[in-house]
Length: 72
Image 1: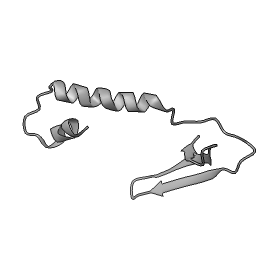
Image 2: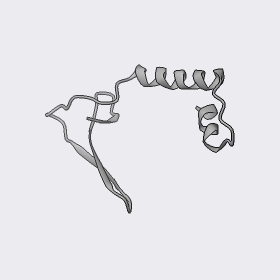
Image 3: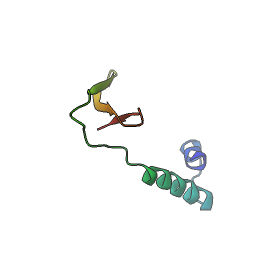
Image 4: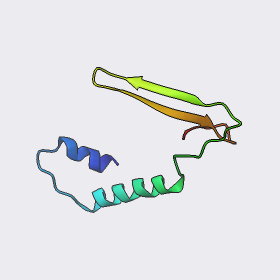
């Protein structure tokens, strides 16, 4: 993703093959595992929160069978 991020500070933006490849690699990684899971009502729920001077957010989460805390 570095080639794409470098465009944020570039004075002249020229999209090339390395940028396309970086975006495609990120897309493949995102397709490998579904981030959102369905809830399991026999397990506890957790709420993760975050705030700033501009807003507040929250995510409902739960541990899966592999003991990973995942968003629902």
